[in-house]
Length: 400
Image (tube, rainbow, N blue to C red; front, side, top):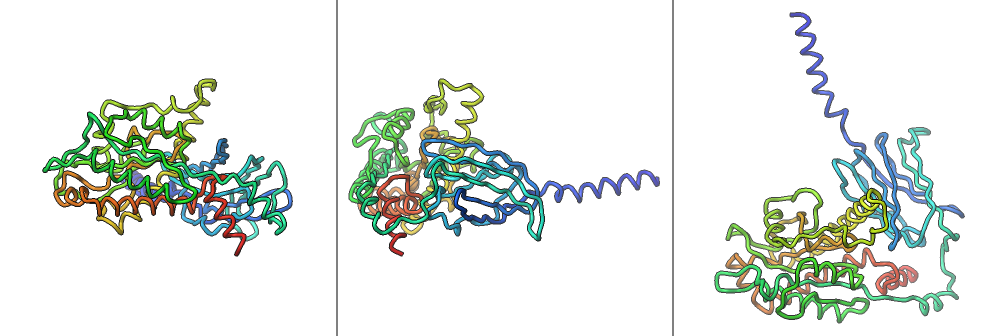
């Protein structure tokens, strides 16, 4: 009896200790400073961590994967002006891991290492970034006109995809309202608004009532070197009471809800797509190609989630929301591995109230304006390299 009692005590102790032993390391904070020859980025950690780094080009990115780590800090306060780092993004990766993506303005040499607790500081991950040429800390006033004249100021390319079309009417409302007609109108209004905004260019996947396969829609976005892809829908749901707008992006794992899973299955049909065919990986070793594809897809999904969240926030002031967070599922039309992509459900045409509003010109214009506002807010925070919007942001900072 004594041995059995002792064994029970040991097992109970182990059960209580287990949650604490597997608790994730917290990424608490990030600090940044420069010297003449390098840029140092330090992540403050609550404990030890395992990590790996990769780099991707066109555009240049540095990716850091931290195993068993969660982000509890905020990178938004880092002063990235006049550094090789244009922006810092982060997201969940794998089972309980965190991926951090540094968007870079050029190639760098990386030296990274972990530091144990010492001198009153805890665990740290240190990244030293060396550029090929010394960083220009500040442009002299006399050089501003030269920079202004030489700047390419390219347009941000937005590809707008009105869902369905032609032989595929999409969802049909109780009074015969067709999804393909509603979303074409909204997409055309969004395209007109984008064309009026300096620094943006827009391409419509279809500008009339014809069918475009899902594979072709993704190819159109990549053909135009799109900076983002937005697919506009007004679907049906199993429950007629379901209403409000939703935003979805791709998930390489499972769907985040039953509704997201249903929507993905409905949209995909038999026209599924393998993303490996969309990247130029034919000359790569199969294992390396898989790593490159995985890295690119995860970085793109992280950007898509950020984009989707901004768009959803803009729609909240215009219509009710079906979900207050960005949902994820395996939408084939969002599987471009290097273009941030979202699918917006502007409402449910199967819902009587939503359907009544979706067919009115006033509501269609309001939705298009909301989508534009969300896209614009996202790109003001994340302007693509060499774009007019990026140049505009630089000019504003220079005047402060």
